[in-house]
Length: 317
Image 1 (cartoon, rainbow, N blue to C red):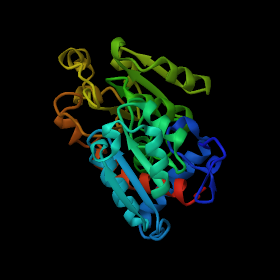
Image 2 (tube, rainbow, N blue to C red):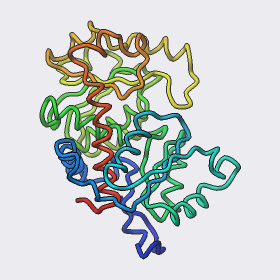
Image 3 (tube, one colour):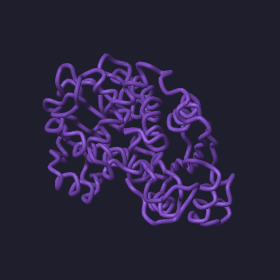
Image 4 (cartoon, one colour):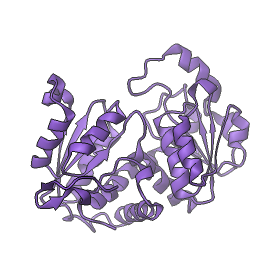
């Protein structure tokens, strides 16, 4: 994505800033190049060790994080840069300073800002006012950094994802929305099995279908799973979600268990972005079973983040 405006910052024009805020902002070839770079970094981990020397990434976490925080911290270190992790309580944001003012100040100190927030609007405000690249570390709408690792993981084990069939079971949440966007950008078929009350947002479905994506939503689990090369789910209660018992009961039929996996292709893989609530959205037998790639998936967050950082900060193609 290209930023807007003509303000100068560190002798750079804002229109040249490379933000990573959502898969929908990119040409598919750019995302494909990032996946290729991530695979290269995994094969040759020292190949870009000084690429971000002298660069600093500020990371703001409104919600707790394991994989996003640690993978970006390690990624910056491996690429020769450094990171600073902050919470709103450690900033004047926690005392009412505006996002716009925070963005302007941080842009004078650091080379990029990652934000993990419960409000996608906060991310967009940060982008509007920042003079450096902004990275979406997860919002209530999407989680594009995770999806890049997911594609990398699938392709490591099953080859090109283009033309494959992916099944999503459970909540039509921010991760489901990102998979919908990815179906349009990476060319795979996607079937989402969700209860009607927790179906994905229609605007994201409309966006993907307008771009020719093969995306379907059903309440029927078997319809979604038929011929699936990959089965994906996510935690049912996350972010600031306080729906509780009612939501869990609605989603309980969509649990990924061994019986459910038997309806997918025999060599189907299982993905989950973690953290997992074992016994709710997925059983112990599946997450620890032969189909599961969840820990490869978690590892690949590091390599995907490295590729994203190189694109944002080093002008990688």
